[in-house]
Image (cartoon, rainbow, N blue to C red; front, side):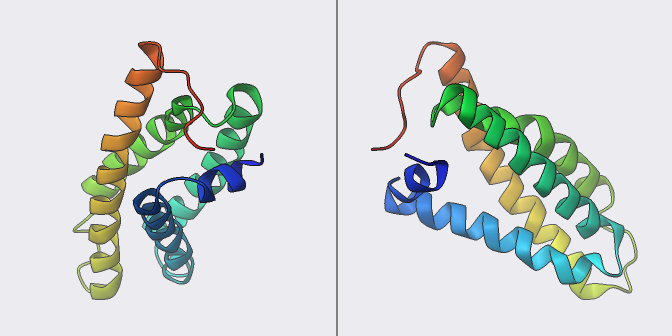
Length: 128
C-alpha cells in the first residue's frame, strides 16, 4: 500500500485530523505572500513531506513517521510561538498563526506519543 492508501485506511477521526492539518498548510500559502511566519510554515511543510516519505519508504506506515513532525514541527512551533504577536497590524495573519500554534501543538502531542511507543517496541503497521 502507498502512504496515502494507509492514511485513508486510518480511523475516521485520524483522517479528519490529517485533513485539518493539510488545510492548515494550504491556508498558509496566501498568508505567505506577505509574512515570513506562514512562509516558514510552507517551507517546513515541504521538507517534512520529503522526510516523511523517506521514513515511510524505510519503515513503512509505523509510528516512527511521527519523528518527522517531532524534528521539523517542534522548532516551527517554537518559532511561531515566539513571533505570535509580531506585526499586530496584520490581524488575520496573527489569527492564522495562533490557530496554527494550536493545531501543531495538538499534532505534536500525538507525534511524541507515537515516537515513544515506537522506541518502546510498538512497530506494527498502523492501518490496513
